[in-house]
Length: 237
Image 1 (cartoon, rainbow, N blue to C red):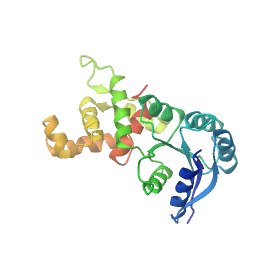
Image 2: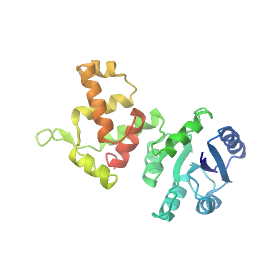
Image 3: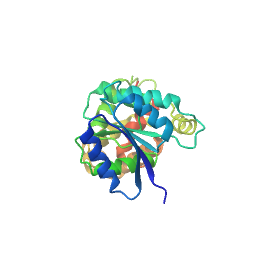
Image 4: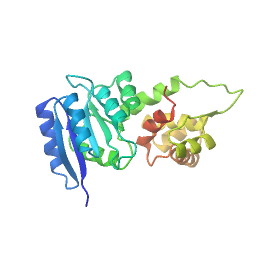
């Protein structure tokens, strides 16, 4: 079994050591390098080309967001390994969250989450999906809602801009309806299907249909991934 190759870029020695020790317990994960700052971290990423880079936002020489952007810009599109970025921070500010994803981060991991969850975050990110804390998802969806201009006289749908050519075709052909966006917001609020049905005065069966349509249109597999995909699709400017 091929292991998931990880690079750690974190300036606090104890935190980095704790991360390394936790990940070392996982049979399918291998830490291939560590760095204490962004400059050495960029060199590490370019030389090792890991599957996942775990990057702290608050690095001493430049932010983890700037490092993410520099590394993403330097990656060869034809490389056999496209390193995914898992940003790690205690910062929940809207500007930081949106800047991280805009820079190319694939997942956003809160430091106050249990260290045991880090392996799950790594696996989910490696699979091509996004790990995102529910609070962060709420920030993303709140921002996206502010940037949507509704005109019910013209259309009752919310058109989403492109991600990749394939996803673009899906979203152009099947845009989210206004009702689906209502359901999307309640999903991120943590509401169950029953609670969504009660709040929107619709049946649970109808809610399930909306949820299935949302996941299909945003090309994701579960509820926690919809916020990142909405951001990447252009709901958030």
